[in-house]
Length: 146
Image 1: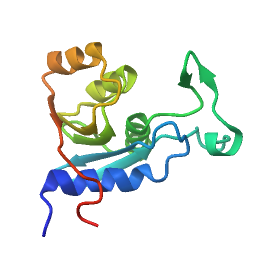
Image 2: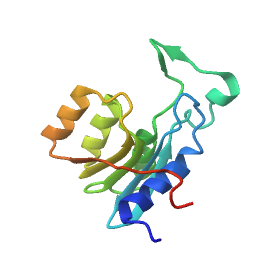
Image 3: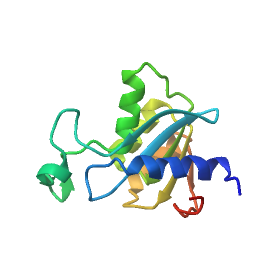
Image 4: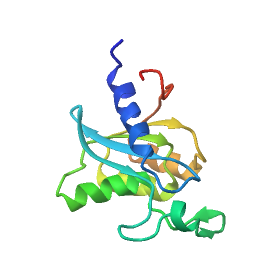
């Protein structure tokens, strides 16, 4: 059976998450406009630096600070290659943290589609509401189209 667009792009986000190098959470992000993929991102260390799966986590107050989050990496890839993210839709495996939420708002996303309600921050949800960004939690089974 052919998947709907949201399931299709979320499945791709899960495929992207397989590249994550921080095993605390395998997160993938896909930025899409007009049903076309603009960029992708996964959580991992800055380019050229050691990854958690090589040297371990760098924990500060319970958070691994060695990695850049998937959403931020997707935005960085767009900036690096001169791709506008204004009006795009963000498909992400896990609900974004507060900092990624703010970055996505400033990147001009119009819709946020996530699967896992991981550490949903009340400030993040309020910022998304104030920015008038449509937020959808997708009822999705990652392997349902394999």
